[in-house]
Length: 307
Ligand code: HSE
Image (spheres, rainbow, N blue to C red):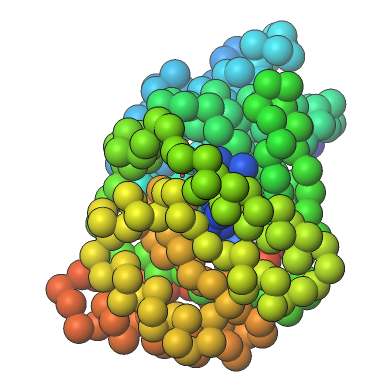
């Protein structure tokens, strides 16, 4: 195989209570990439459609993660990358991770899969670090592993795969404003009171338990964020109204997707997720803010080969 075309999905990081550790993979929104072997050594980005991003491999997240893999593999040939970007950068649904994870996934396929998903996550974290200024894997891991993931530690990198209840659906509303992850991280407190930490880690633990036991009521009571949301929600127009509308229409929970501005909700069943989409949309229709919405089941596969 000399060429592979892949779909690299969007992801929701943090999942309300699990800042920097929890994430899940979306199904029907993502980028496409074509990667092919070339006699010329190195990484060459030959095409980018959709958004204006750098072509220099060492300035592009897909390029940086591919270079990290190449440094490890020590090959006497190289790769060309075409990026068809559908996820807007700065959207909060893992735009940079889709690129960073996509390039290393595709190269691994062309090499005959010498690397594990954990090793690919490590390479992709180098690309993510270029975009956000810090190495975190809570978008990359669900893109590569699929489903829900928990990044237990970064060094050594330990990713846990968490089961997803069959009827769980995500609704995402993406206001068309850009929030830079690095800036959304800079406004967060460096320390938090112990009492707040206790509440938050109890919710992370109970959410993971609820996902294992298909306990929708426990999912509902665990989807709370008392650490990050109070700071970041101020950056997102109408956040409180969207959240209220989603919860009032039957969502199990609603919060900021990654570092925002996207807002996600989780619901039991597709019909409920569509009802929640409608309720979220109604809030933004009364404003000047342009937006997109998505309803998606949890993508258990992660990045997939198209051809
Ligand atoms: N955990 C990250 C954050 C996800 O919230 O900053 C965004 O890349």
